[in-house]
Image 1 (cartoon, rainbow, N blue to C red):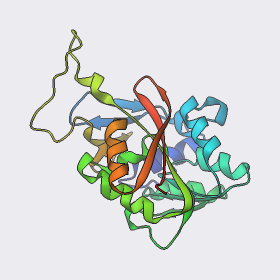
Image 2 (image 1 turned 90 degrees about the vertical axis):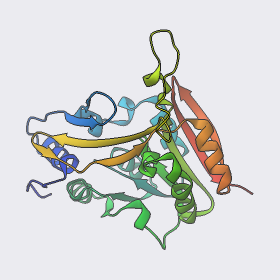
Image 3 (image 1 turned 180 degrees about the horizontal axis):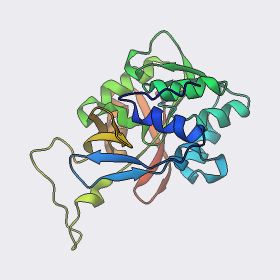
Length: 239
């Protein structure tokens, strides 16, 4: 694994620093809508028994040849590979892909929308991986592309959150900016130490909108489980 700092790649930089056993700092998530948040680096390296129930359930449903989209440090891919499944990982972070490859995972630095010519039994999009749609208006296009990568009988496993509670006032009433397309459309920027990545669009989608978008492109969406406003969905080809 390369120890070289990846300029413009805060996630890869953070993963490599943590793996090299230097003292890590939190990844800062900067938003144009709400207050900054943090991602403790330990979250990217947790073991199966440390994962939330939704992720554990998703991994239990994975089968066959699996594509891990936005694999990060590879915690999901490593677990499934240890279970005997064939795993391909993709991530746009050069540092993350270096780390994945150094740990014996088949990983490629690639944008999900540029992936073609391959077929999978399971497409894994965890930690709100479906957020790569960026905006609700791009969700159908994202699912349509994912559909082209599925084998017959294949599935997409994704989780997301209905973040309407961010827009509730003290009385529980909702306030929504009518000038915005959808309340789950966000823009984020990642920062690790002094390293910042580019701004990017990210989607948090409620299950009803995911269900409708799936139906439109010929996928059947089932809500497998839910915890508070966070849910796991399984999307399969409609017969």
